[in-house]
Image 1 (cartoon, rainbow, N blue to C red):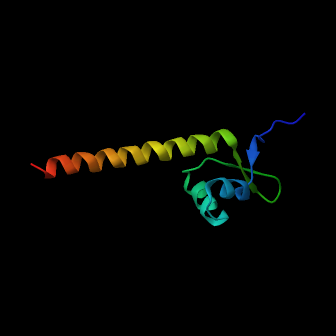
Image 2 (image 1 turned 90 degrees about the horizontal axis):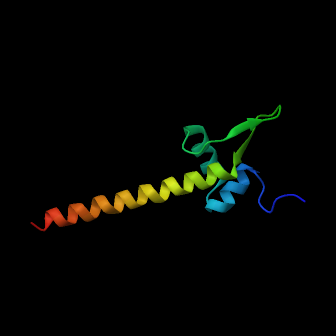
Image 3 (image 1 turned 60 degrees about the vertical axis):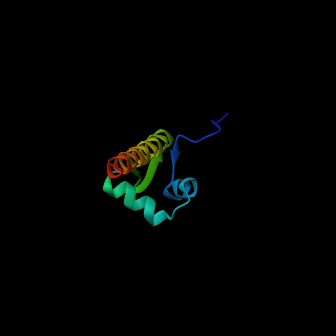
Length: 79
């Protein structure tokens, strides 16, 4: 029986999960922000589910750091 979640996702699958366009996912893969592999003679991109989850975690950490930076700036500007 195959796993409930496939190991590899297409760009369209990732776009659906992230609620963005396939073009935006392609840009993320090409820039290296989201790790993917090319397979087959036509070089179709696949993203491992684990890589997608790692990307999402990094984005949450980045957002938290951004919030912390703004909170620190608010404290120092009150002085």
